[in-house]
Length: 417
Image 1: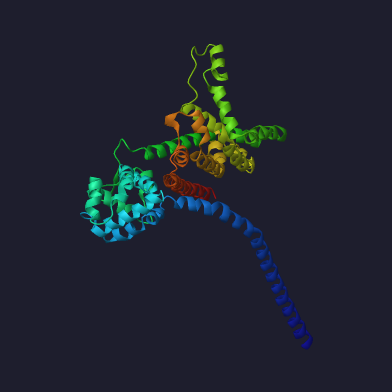
Image 2: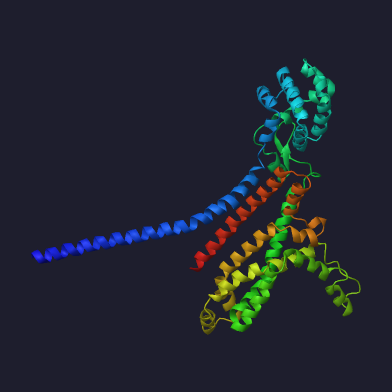
């Protein structure tokens, strides 16, 4: 009895010791995994997420205004918003303008406020040149004597709104909204509304490209998944040739192919199908052709990876039970490809939303997408805030569509299971 009890105790101790060793081994593996992943996470946060967050913050950042006009930003807080500000506020704006004019910062304020109310830039420029003539009070009367706009309540409403540290002005402009004279958000006039139509055009073109790549990519992926290894490897090499060439070179190549004296028009005219060249470039058709060619691999590869994992026995079993080939394909094979269709559609659609070079080169003025105007505000207008606002609007739209579409794909997968 004593020996048996001792042996049981030893087995129990050995079991506890083994359990502790397993727990230590698992913890060590977790620490090793964390150690391997942490450098990558740090790199992504520092060089990817932080710059994007900083850029998007520019869409609401307005702190520069208060730095240039510090006294005015404090004094105008006491203004009720009705009538004109008091003498103290006018004295503050005069003092700030003198310093800003000497530091050549007044033009920055003018450009920012002019985006909210046209005419503010010329007002500040005119007043800045004469501001040194005001030596003392009454500042209110002297400033209004320079320009009657200083006695207009609307200009002070814009000034008060523009001196806050954050602003929704650019985000509102990105969806064709603005502040009215009563400081309420309203729609811009129809002749000024352009950004909603640009975003709609971007979504429409991206959706069209997604459908075209799916129509062309599905049979290609199906053939690759069911052909011989030698043919499959050859098709894979041909498909991946797209990645071996610069995007700019590929786009310029399509201009040469589709132009009036290009290969396609010359061939059609040689065969007698047409008598005059067709306009196939610098329009929507050219955008569709070039972008479909560039993005086709991103649809084919996810589809091919899913189709390769689908057992062919399922379709044969359905046919053996009396289903026709087309019925077996639609009801048995096609539902199993939904994950590949969803992944490919998301990859193509999201990339198409941000395309810039291809539509800019092969499209016309009415075929430009949001990315073109982002580049325009960065390079031409040097308006990073408006560019960031358009980028943030596109990011929100992309994220929303991703969540909606991804949820529907998951639901479909659950039904399949």
